[in-house]
Amino acid sequence: MKRLFFTVCLLAAGLFGARAQMTLTLDEALRIALSENPTIRVADLEVERYDYVKRQTWGNLLPQLSLDGTYTRSIVKQEMAKGLSFGADNTLTATGTISLPLFAPTIYRTLKMNRRQAEAAVEAARASRIDLAAEVKKAFYNILLAEQSLEVLRESQATVQRTVDDTRVQYENGLASEYDLLTAEVQLSNLNPTILQTENSIALAKLMLKMYLSVPEEVEIEVSGRLDDLRDRVLAGGESFSTDLSDNSQLRSLDIQAEVLAMQLKTVNAGRMPTVAAFGNATITGNDMSRLSFGDMMGGTAGTAPASSSFWWQHPISAGIQVSIPIFSGLTKSSQARSIRNQIRQLDLQREYAREGVRVELEAAINNLMTARETMFAQERTVAQADKAYSISDTRYRAGAGTILELNSAQLAMTQAHLSFSQAIYDYLAAQAEYDRIVGRTE
Image (tube, rainbow, N blue to C red; front, side, top):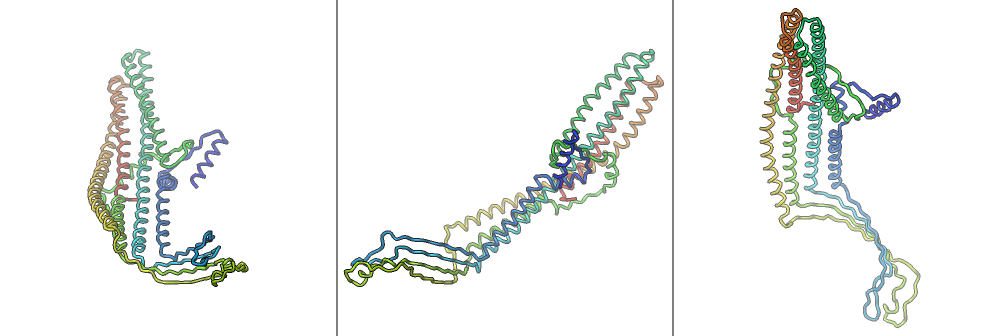
């Protein structure tokens, strides 16, 4: 559906000579990414593959039926004394075989292992969704940060431009020095590279979001909302954060992998147990008896007695029970079991190390959340103070009581305060996305 939408956008853009454009909210971006990103689609296909693997194993418990056919032409037949020959010139044989496992421990264990393998694939798909959601959120917030920073810089540029214009008028009337005019113009020129760099950052951030959403490069995207609008969401954040890691996808995947290895060991050990199967055979054989040496068979001297062409048909049918008891297989089973036990010990060490690593990541994410939140509160007060300081400095400068350096310093501090406030909001939201990834939140 989303691809159809993109195609329609591109066709419409081609007809009207404009680039296709779409505006996205964060929820819409997440929905598109979780349905169109190749990583998610590959993970879903892997889940589907394990369903086929389970069916393949289950098929080994169903009756197995085969049909074979053979045609034999005798070139030189076996002979005894006095030219007595055996066998027919032409032989036709058709054989039907059916078998049904009655007791197959290895297959039963393999079925249980397949179920856990399917659960591992589902968990891997869930992990892909969690990771992708976190990356999409960060990319979305990064665009909001860059756009808001550009807005602050352009407002600062307009403010400095006004100062330059006013200073030029004062200079032409002899009320300001050339140094004041040059200082204001230099400050205005210094803003241009920063604005250009921020515009490039927006373009790169949008390309990154397009990649996560699998949106064609020809489609222009715009994000809905402002970073300042998310301030209340930061304020609504609780002071305490859960440290429960039971839903962490990495740890859950390792736990499932440990269970799969344990079942794999049981499957290998089950190969030492007897197997019982029922079988049945039905054969129909036709021998061409038209050229048997009847005279030789009777001990006479006459040649072969011609006979009409005919087949002698036989159709034996048999059924039975087959029991197979493994006795010695060249130590392969014991070697396989030792190899799996070695893997289990390795995995136990990996799980313990991963658990400690995830705990460290969780503590770091919580610390980043608290730090970003407190920084935002501090920067919010700083913004108010910087705005007031600039207003006072601007009034003093226009009244002739202040200097251009004082005004430039106040203007620079105000710009930096606004940028730092936006950065603090972004840092909190990015830390929140990372926290959600670690604790395994899918929302």
